[in-house]
Image (cartoon, rainbow, N blue to C red):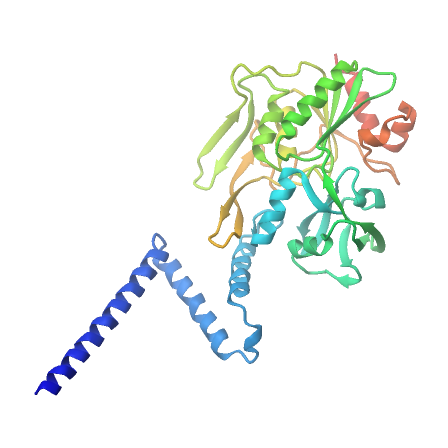
Length: 407
């Protein structure tokens, strides 16, 4: 009888433990999946089921990395949104590199990449970078790094191949007009010169170049304007060519440097259909000087916001080529392991209500570079005569002509 009672107690204790374990498991599941729909819950369970099958049954189990498989699943989900080149998933390492770019310093060759048709395409080489000095141009398609093909690879993976330690060599092969070109460069720590200027010889007009919308770029541009005015500049060519964008808040501050208080900068259309206007703050004191804006096929995101705002408020004439058409607002969502989703959460419209996504900003005055030319920076043209500058940059020459016609 005593033995029987003891067995019953053991069974009861075992059942209690099992119930506690099950309850803890169910509570954990409910907490981790709280707030999602039944349909999404089923999808998450289906992924977990597939992961278990691969882990248990795949012939080469040593290659199975649940973390990599999870990243792959997230990237597949992001790809299904069809916001190629904008909405994207970043690993913890890529998050760190993005933060470096925003800060304005990183080690590499200075080539900015976008994804287009499953290819890594150069959006712009940074001013003064090894890539620019070597002759890499916007629109070049990266096909190999150090002799290894990168075609069809994720743009983040390609960027990682290009990066490396300071002082090391890298060979990049690009496809340009159906011909391959190889460039050998030395990686360097790049402190991006955010803003620069040069007074066009024999004129009161300054060529004002903005490279990126990184942290403190509005302050850097304001300082460049002040220096140019001290040197005698009374008119400005704001050059946003090959500027692929950056921090949205900096774009708002930069637009405000040229627009009076209350002017609309852009309208944000949220996922739920609501719209919010962003305007220049009250008591704003903008620059009161003739202005034109230069853009090209490498101008994107924040560059398009500024160009659209200045155009639609009749503050500046936009000159050059149609821009990229990056018309979505990105928000970063950090995940628990340090990775992140850069998600397009809204679209933006110019003050006149124009959607920019996929269509871009069309210039008021079209201007193309002549064969063999490329956008020249203020640092590259210092010491040259006006004729020499314009002989190398037909877009800048056209911008100067339009600017001199302004009162």
